[in-house]
Image (cartoon, rainbow, N blue to C red; front, side):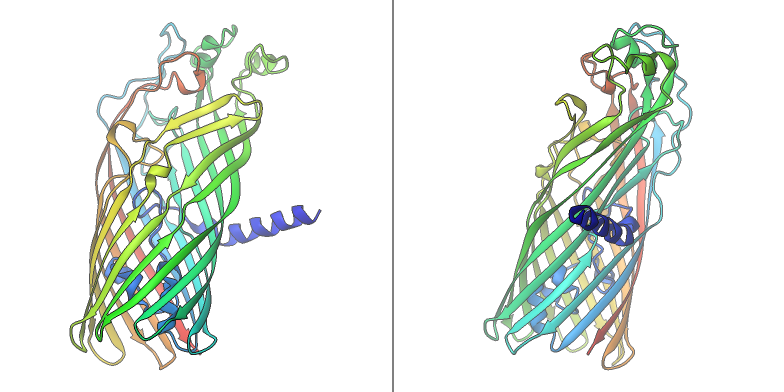
Length: 457
C-alpha cells in the first residue's frame, strides 16, 4: 500500500510539472530552457554566468556567488513546428503478396504544438563558505502528433516523452578563486508512442486467414520509470572580471515498464488471440524498454568588458551515443518493436552579450549553433530533428533591490530534415513491416518565449 501511495504521489508531481513539456529544443529531445534569464543570451556561458538561483541546473558552484537566500520561478512557452513535404512516399501494401495498397492521404499537418515548460529553484547560504539549493525542472521533452490518416501513419502518429527532475545541490567556496559543487538528481520519465497498425499485412505475414484487405487500426505503447543521477560543477575566478565554469551532468538509465494496447482489431485477429501461439502479434500486454539518456559536459566563460558590457560564451558536449537502439520487449521476451537510432554525440556553441543600459535595465543578446544527434539514414518522423541556429534577445528589469523580472525570446532556424524510411523487409518482424516507404523532408522552426521572477530574501 505504501509503495502504491508513493507511486501515486510521484505520478501527481509528474503530472503537475512534466505534463507541460512538449517540444524538443536542444539536439535530440533535450531541453535547454531551464530559466528565462539565460534565454536572451541563447543560453551562452551558463556554466559561468551564476546570475541567479537557476545556476543550480547549469553549474551549482555558482550558488557561492549568491549571498543570502534566493528563489527563482520561470515559465517557458515553446512552439515548435515540423511539416512534412512528400518526395516519393509509397503506400503500405495490404498483404505479403503485394495486394491492396492503402491510400497515401495527406502529409500529416504540423506535428508541433505549444508547450509550457516550468522551472523553479531555491538557493540558501548557510555559512560564508557553504551553500545549498534545490531545483525542479524538465530536462527532456518531446511531442510530435500527426493527423490520424496521414501517409506516414504506419510509422508514427503521436510520440510523447515527458520528464521531471528534482536536483538538491551543495556548493563550497574553497577560496576567493575556486568554488566546487555537487548534486543528486531524482528523475522520472513517461513515454507514449502510437501509430497505425496494418492488420491485413500482419495477418498475412502471420499465416492468419480471414482478415479483409485494407484493414487497419492503431496501437498505443506506454511506459514510465524513475532513476537517480548526479551533477558536478567547478567555478574559477581567473581574473577580477573573468569567470570560467565547468559542469557535468551524468547519464540516466531507465527500464521503462508499461503496456501495449491494440485498437479496432478485426474479428479474426481477436478470435486468434484467445489461443496463442496461433497468432499473438496484435495482443495487448506488458512491455519493457531500456533507455539511457545522455550525459553533458559544458565549459562556460563570462567576461566583464566594462561596467556596461559583458560577454558570455560556452561549448557543450552531449553524449547522445548512449541512445543506440529502442527495443520494446513483451513480458515473454519477444520483441514487439525495434527502432535503430545510432545517434552520435553532439556539440553546442553559444555566444552572448549583456548591456547594462541603466540601473534597473539590462539587455541581452545571443546566438548559438546546436548539432543534431540524428543521422539522415535513420531519421524517424517521431523525432524529425536537424541542426539548428539560435537567435535570441531578452531583458531584465530590477523592480527593487530584492526582485527582478526577466523576459526572453528566441527563434530557432532548423535545417530541413530529410527522411527515407522503407521499413525492414523481414517477415519475421511483421509489426515493423508493411508500412510503406516514407520519403521526403521536414520544414521546421521553433519559437520560445520565457518569463521569470527572481527574489532575494
